[in-house]
Image 1 (cartoon, rainbow, N blue to C red):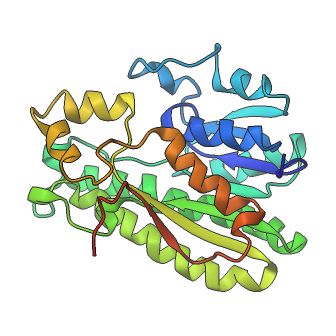
Image 2 (cartoon, one colour):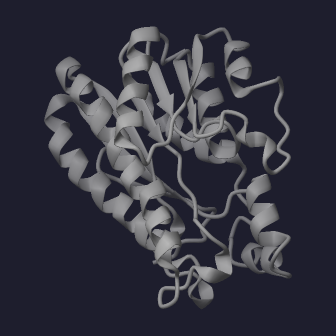
Length: 266
């Protein structure tokens, strides 16, 4: 219960990795704000959850929880969400910027041909959403001289994907890595740490439907590139977030941690 008394806001938390973050932080005692543009987004790809909603799953762990529907690409909606969270649970102590994802189809994400619409949407979801949420919580964190922000990058930000797919996504996530480093420099003197994680492929229903079911042989090709020989599970990613927001990560800031089973090589 290292996080008892803290309030954690997790964006994109109604399914998959975001849900895993919310549940893991709740098990450490944090009160949780479940944010998503659709609080039932787990239904979209047929993901199974333990109760009627992620909010109910979190509450079953004995902590307070609210769900807030908001689009992180809208600065006004983000500001309203953070205000509502503070009014209901208290000021946000921990922010996990998980919302994001590729806009458009994987095979339409090449650097030289990605559409303007998909490119802008991908940058807004991943980079601008991270910036807007971080700005919204930073003011209160600075006043209280404590806070933990964890952003979500990707292996696509650190090495080009084979064949050049995910170019728009990789560019947006590379921006997240840079923003993390700058924000950590600014907020460090206030006792606030800012880090990001860079997952490789995570075994979610969305990935299976959009990639493995759509591209023959994609799963086998990916597994061959991972020394640990398996895809990450959502909780593999959440465990690293737990490290960064508890006392174990008190002296870690400005870092991008690869959570990839060895897939990222330098």
